[in-house]
Image (cartoon, rainbow, N blue to C red; front, side, top):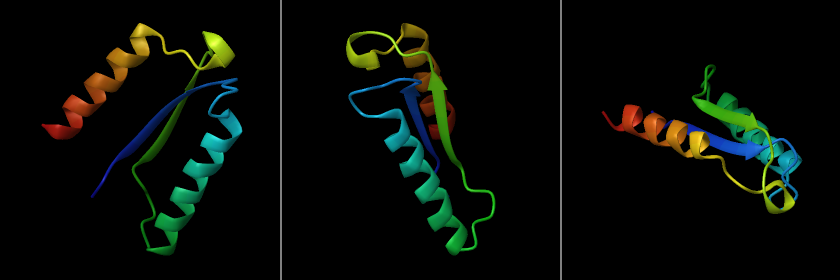
Length: 73
């Protein structure tokens, strides 16, 4: 079973917060069509920082690294 996690700012104008949400929602809908009722698909929305709200805070990198480590072990 594959796990997916995305991080995005709440006002990311480069990637587009709405686009990211729509993508995650579509992934979950597709999983549901394959009878995966509790799909391991996550979207973490945090404060936008930096140019066009596309920056990443150090704690976000740390959180992502810990999640990857947990997923691999």
